[in-house]
Length: 88
Image 1 (tube, rainbow, N blue to C red):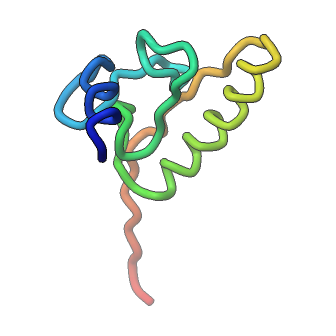
Image 2: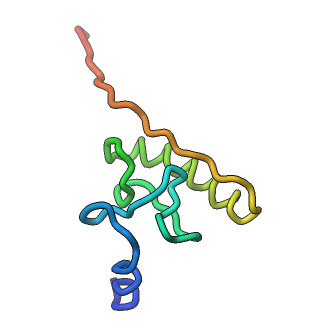
């Protein structure tokens, strides 16, 4: 990270350490053209590749919709689940 990136990131609203404060459409709060997903976003779900992939699908669609002035989709976090195998 260089000094310009550091200065820019220090101006963006953060919810907690290293998490960008986003809206339900994955747009970073206070930033019209910046979106966040995965580990850097404050989405209330597990931080792993599977959920980041789900977020990325909505984020990609929202970037396209933003450019074409269409409404943005809301990302609905997945509920926690436990995978339990019994037997073989």
